[in-house]
Length: 171
Image 1 (cartoon, rainbow, N blue to C red):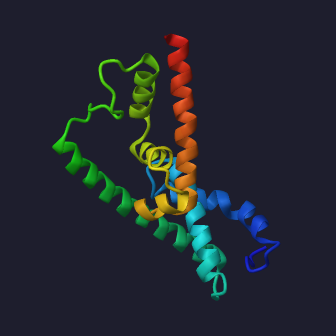
Image 2: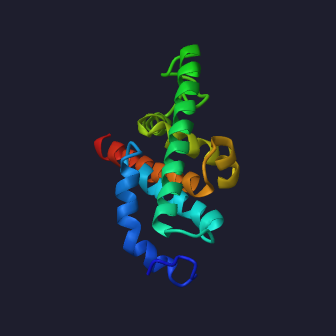
């Protein structure tokens, strides 16, 4: 089923070609999670802007996936540069929360768990919980898709829960 124009066939088409797209995306991304996000972003780009073009749908989707991967790499490079710049201005061990010496054990555990999150997950989690931004606002702020912001938030919550559960068990 090569035609992705039919609304009922896109899921079948993706079922057929998704693993190939993921394998290709994995070559352009540092992790499987990033590759999955890039495939999703690329397919959405194709669906919104290119599905009515002539040509092989797989090639068009693959081009969109590659562009999404390149966009992500540029965004990650800009973020790393910002983090390096701001990291030089202050200590990376500065507390996340404005608490004094009376910080309770739970606050310290949450802070330690936050430090263990990947920077991109921590950034989204902080913007969502403490910044009270919507996923659309976070996406605009970080130059991401709203779906990527939401998935990073879910990954961060899962990892945070895992870290805190482990801390409870060992504490």
